[in-house]
Image 1 (cartoon, one colour):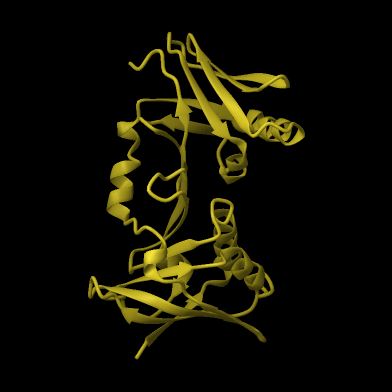
Image 2: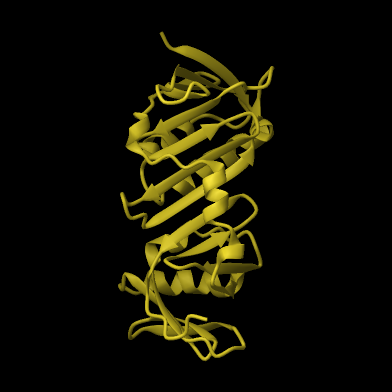
Length: 260
């Protein structure tokens, strides 16, 4: 028999919570949420054995949820058809007292993890009921693995783009039909280019680095514009855009002529 746990979503965080879910649906239509007493981690990924894109948010649990005694377990939840789930949640008014009730069963692999079976979000007159997906539908990634893999101390190099330039790049890319934005680095000068349409110098590394990267421009909308400068950290096979609460990892094709 499934057990249940009930939380109250803090009113000033409800719209922010929905915004984060909606943002993750730009990666894929399935989201995984992991709730423990310290953090809520939500993420979405594109690709199977080869991860093409990944984004997560990590926030403090009690910043978003009100509940009594500390949680003695973690809850793993797969939200399938996440775009429709978010659209339903948008009918709940932010001023309402919103509760999140999760029905769960103990994981067969780990007795400290509970797998969600269903979700009920209640606000005012509206109840949104959602069946949770199966735990095997999405790769499990925990906080420690994420911290290790996405530690910027392990990056090879990085470049930055100002917020205003990034906004212009998004607008230019929306005009033209190419799927790819080329990122060229020549003697340290970083240029974004869309073939036969436009190019923009966005940074200068002040070194002799040369490299060529390609970025699928559908993921431009996944980059948060919360900082004055957006930093791209380059690892062996992916680029990372990181802020205080989120990580966006994008795989790329590359051709380095200088790998120092």
